[in-house]
Image (tube, rainbow over all chains, first blue to last red; front, side, top):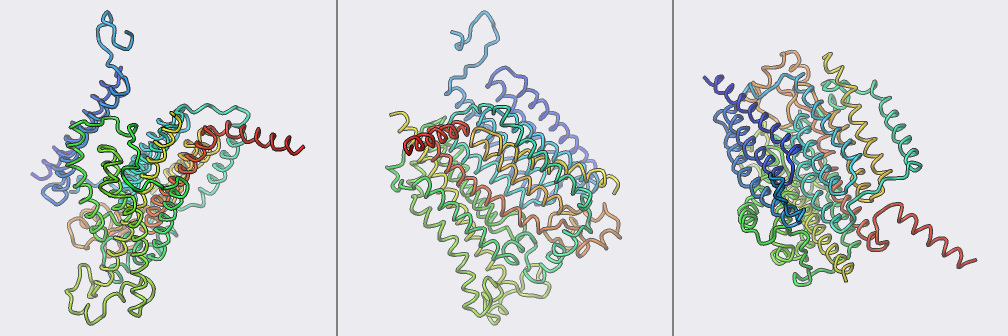
Length: 110
Length: 358
Length: 152
């Protein structure tokens, strides 16, 4: 039983790795700062949560599991705040989002 | 539990792959043409290096590299780079070839000694087989602390560490002398807008209000837990300084200087080094040698105390108290020095900005 | 062990490459802050070499475990008994802690000395108005020429 739970944890960790790669591709490919922040924060929160959940299942009930829970709370507290600060700083320094409709010019071009 | 452990050879392959990633970041650094990019690459380099150090069984070093390299030195670099030009002009090709040839020669010279170096992971290699092994064998008997790195750092080589702490203090004094630390009262401190991109954002201030006390608490946990797990005075000091820098970033340096005046920070830096040395002299006064923690407590008093963890039939309270005392000194010195350096840079940079603008 | 033989030149080569690259950045960059970053890379890479020497195959972090604890048994389960008997300490194989101690303090000292270098750069910028190495050299050369002309 413990072995099976451990394997579920391993699958979750691999899923987290997949999400991280998706996030990295997004950071490289997306057109402007805000969509890139969006991609990066998916890595920060989604992948990190899956990773800690997977490691929790692999570690079983132990002091390490409690530490993992604390780490998860910290990630949930810090990375959205960091993404918010990043977006705020980008907006403050004059970056405007790239809009989808080419007929509607963005503020940059106006 | 066994799922979390890879086979020894897979471990070596994994760490070689991570080291490739680190080297890749250095290549990116070579090509970077903007100072901001360089600083962020340096930060990423440190963080990846910390991961690699974890695979090399060096959690204490990884901890230090992550908090110093990716945290505090990035902040100091950003603070110093703020008002300089961002674009790095390229060198004239005529000036490039001599350094390039010199570095290539250095690389070839170093590569030539590879055949004589021990095999990667060899347990019988000269560096690992003698003195390192001796420390591992003797620590439970001599010191009684499970973390051998802390035992070597704080007790076996305590004198060495006193020197390192003094160097850090001296570097802090050097920065203050170079940048002139006249900023004494909070009102004289310049309000640096440049460091506060999202000033007044409730999300940041709420997150910071939640985080800063926990970071400080964590620093003390790292300090006290250094004997049992990864951690110690150096890491605790840097984490404490990071909490203060976070406060300065979110609420402004002026607020931080009100909460922790410049004079107090400077006094604490000196106090940390002095406290470390004082433990050494206390041991002399008790009839031992400099930094001999066994002499800190009288044998009669120590016999009355319960036997400590991993004791092997020995009482180690003198060592335990001595290590904790000098680690506290290290934490105080490192945290105060880093904070003083940060204060000096933010004050100076915004002052020269104001001078440039007028 | 053959795998380790293949990896040995690769990991040492990477370490030495990073050292040489850090030196190159420190020597050829025109922006003084990038020069300091290069020095930082050089210093960290010297640490890499130390840490590479400290790794023991199948070892764990140098935090003493009780020989009969579950963690120690899990670590021992992937190694053969002869290897542990030859290289382990009380039934557990550890990596060498001594290089860790040396590099740990070196990293913190490195950050402090980096701050001194940056402070010097801040003063240079205030004096010369630039942190471009070649511009500073040109200014210096011009000042030297002026002094010589005044003397002549």
